[in-house]
Image (tube, rainbow, N blue to C red):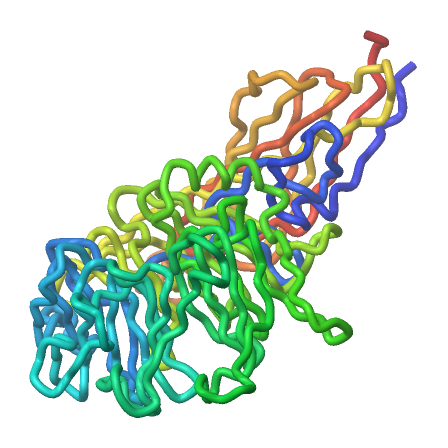
Length: 518
């Protein structure tokens, strides 16, 4: 007598994103144990990330920094030069070359009073005023702060009516601020400095940011917050809080996300998040579900770049030397109150070297290959010349937690996986499964999503009914994948190589029968 066919709905599979911290055998199916080159839609559906489309012909070195001034002029640091970027002439985009005198392109580009100021550790600051680059403060008419021999700040911020900088070689724990609305004056007028030696002991300034009308100074191991920084000479400018034991390990990880600040600490991504009920700043750990993994990343490299992509609702953090990019989806929270996390990786040298979210161009990615890309389409596109591109597919992959088939000591006979997938345009999906905590997978079962083209029903291409191929078919479709073997626990892995169209998993169901006790 045959046993009854049972089914297990997995309609919330992957809803909460990546979890590498908890035991995968005890996690419910709403988590993923691998999620590369995928994102989570607003509904929580797993989908391909978009592609990186190069907008201009690449140059000879990585694009280490990107910025934009108030007039919509985009600049980029490449090797030892700074350029303005003309996207209207993609074959000759690099204009107004300025030799920075630097040995690297790791500049922080600051928009202040419709001018751009660029700082980098151990280098003389530079300024873009209109179309003219100037080295500061060596040029006549510019002066370093009093008592400073070499003015070479590593970080800065343009806010509260002045330019703030810190991390100069001579005084790693002093913040200098310019005269009001004049970033050329550092020794007279309303210019001044904040010495943190008696505030946090011994530490180095890593980043400076604005937060809720306050001044936040990040050290490597401490965070200092001052209130009322509009006039630092006024009595109302006072120390508000010192957060000890937690600092920032990467200047460019600090990003304003709505009314919050995200940054990379030595133990993961954190936020400064002020509540309306309290007047203190509780630190939130946003990377709880990948904590050990990201700590290992930090141990290998602190060369990390962050950006808040407003129209996607994501904070993107890339370890540029490791080809590991984490995407924190803040549109929805997990049960632990953290963002949903997935990862991106890139073939070859097209991966990120820098980020910017600009008013004129949106999300821009400075690439290791020396081009600037936008985030669009579902191919990674390399610009060749003359308006032509080379399309490259990328592979999205995600793996479920261990799904308990719920029959105790009785193994289940695996019958079928039903997957409802939206879109695809000819994408080949591969599925393999793991049984009872084994590392050995099944053979891969492949199937093609809604085909890219469909053969016409009416003869040759010259017929009354037009071409012999119709347009791609899109929409939801149920796919049936036969399973084999028996298991008490099952883990499922999906892979898909993009073919220019998006695809998203809507629903999944496992069908099985009762097997033998084992």
